[in-house]
Amino acid sequence: MKWNHKYYKNLQIGVDTFSLLLSLLLAVFIKKGGFVFPKTWYDFGFILLLLVIWFLSANECKLYRNRINKKFPEEILFNAYANILFLILVSAFLFLSKSVYGDYFRFSYFISIHFGLSVAFKYFLRKRQHSAFAEGFIHDKLLIIGYNQTSIDFNKTISEHVYYGYKCVGYIDDIDEGIVNCENSVTASTTVMPYLGKLQQLEAIFQQQHIDEVLIALPQHEQNQIRKCIEICDQYNVRVRIMPQLEDLTSKTEEIDTIGLISVINLNILPLDKWENQFFKNTFDILFSLLFLILVGWWLLPIIWILVRISSKGPVIYKQERWGLNNKPIVCYKFRTMYINKTPISFEQTSRNDPRITPLGKFLRKFSLDELPQFWNVLKGEMSVVGPRPHPTPMNIASKETVNNYLKRHIIKPGITGWAQINGCRGEVRTHQEMEQRVNFDLYYIHRWSFTLDLQIILQTIIKMLRDQGAY
Image 1 (tube, helix red, strand yellow):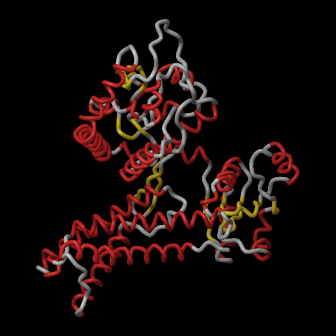
Image 2 (cartoon, rainbow, N blue to C red):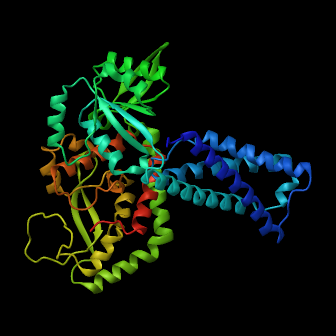
């Protein structure tokens, strides 16, 4: 069955409408001590006004964009943005109009209940949607144009993670079919895409079977072919996406500017090159670190300190040289999680079931509690709350000559958590490919930084900690 994005959007709108009305009812119940239902046209008019203000706020915050294939913390953040704007607008209306409805309910309760119910309902809706994808009940039929490593990786991703809602019917390319079959036999471990023909057969494929979406993964120099494929897709009302090559995605940032009436694209403009973004991120780092120390750190850090002290011999804090901004060495602080080795040995990564780790250390690493002293690194200005994780000096020396763009991850401050970590790149780096993947995630973050992305990473880090998905 075809996956209908508009249907999912309408479900979200319905969920928010129900949540808003139920939250209003509960907020009035808390204030009045009983249920009060609308009786006059003014009551219904006020409720209608609340709905209008909510959907204006949601539209302004782009709440109803399709995020079914995004991580749920992103949905939570945009829901929070919409609620904050809704709070401001309704508060302004009640204050300026001197409306009597402000006395009917506690507005803080109303907003809190609405936010909680909306997030809970949407989480349930998303899980049901993912279940339908996994069971093959609904999906989008996808055709890939172009056979290369990027399209192969994309097909592998949507095949392994069915919650994206895609089913690849095959691909077309002007590459010789014999070469394709040979490559498919070499890469038999991955999901093989059926070969459907050459590019000129695109229109015939549309006539033979229904296609919901086309992904174009052709090289940039084939502009004429790309343009022709888009024109054919437009004729058959098929959605089109263009996938850049991996190196374009991770090593460049684009910013559109105008000179007169002419648009130009500036490449390699980093978001954190702008002083206002740097100031905003640095200010957030300091405030977040202080907030953590005031609310949690003042009691949690001493407890861990005492447990480490009495559980094994050695210093409580482990200091290790790592590389920070612009490849400058910094001293990174952690709670010690290993036994003290009296005979120094060369650098060795921590592995699963490593005998060097203490029993308490296993628990601390499991929930990433050993990283908490790095908030002191943040307050010293050496690290950020979110950024590429700093690697030990021996690992940097070994990787800088073998991994493409490795040192580019040091053009911003390292972080306590990062985009690579929440995407599964944690613990021991066993292969060259794993290090390249980690670097690509770091470069993606550097070139796509935003305050929203930082908040999403922090939220996902907390969720992973609670789900016991820490390092080992």
